[in-house]
Amino acid sequence: MKKILRPLLLSVGFYVAACGIVLRVIPGDMARAGAVDAKGVSANTALTSPVQANSNAASVEPTKAAPAPHDAAFDIVDISHHDTITDWAALKGATSGLYTKATEGSTYVDPMLGAYSAAAEKAGLPIGFFHYFWPTNDPTDAAKQADHFYQTIQPYGYAFYPALDVEEDNNLTPAALTAAVLSFATEFEHVSGHSLLIYCSRKFADKYLTSPALAKYGLWVADYNGQKPAQAGAWKSHIMWQYTDHASIAGVPNPMDADHATASIILPGH
Image 1: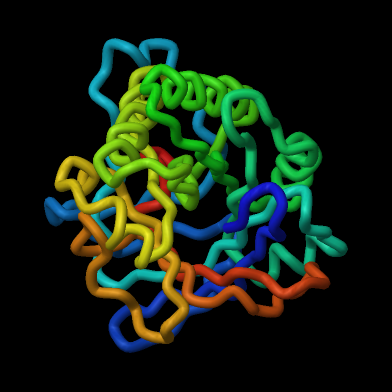
Image 2 (image 1 turned 60 degrees about the vertical axis):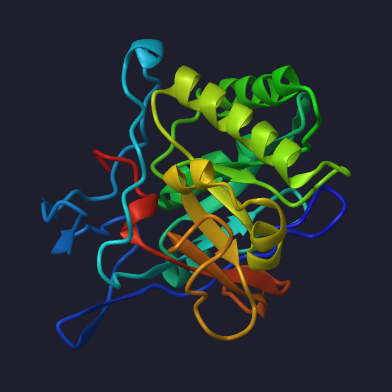
């Protein structure tokens, strides 16, 4: 993912490997059939309606993204107003869902958020949202950004865990940057009632995000070296892997980021 001045690219494809047989899963009908969570419980929940706001969010334990169930994998696209979708039907045929940029900082809202959310719903594509983070030394600013993010996405509903896009260090030390990320994540859990994913590159994680306190959040890692990263910063595994920034995908004219995701990006009940 790129900041507001850089293009945000997408991903392509969608395959699940099970028992040596490769299956093409139809977007919108995708089910977590046979997936097993960390406790060994079978998860057969289909991607259907988006999650609704949790009216008791402040009084419940936040729902956490589980470790990746075995090697189940599928592909997700991610977009912002920089991207032009020319054929939503073709996009649906090429992917299983999408993340779209919702917010940045404490006030910015992506101008295409509403239009893309509506188009994804009409096309039958499950959706998730991400926030581009501008860290500061003020923990209250991080909390304000989290509130802004949730208040913006809550009316739309979503099927995937929201993501915090961390690419800027803003001249902070690793300790200060970690504190800002944790402040955002804690506030977001408080208001939403569920956890989030943290997106960053492997190199960024290795340099700035090494605190064990971050490992409770699912990692969406960017690494273009051709091999799935075994570890990044505080994380020993990841939930989604952005493996290239130059993929071609149906329905979108420009090159895109491509991500291999696991069923662990799916919120419970979807």
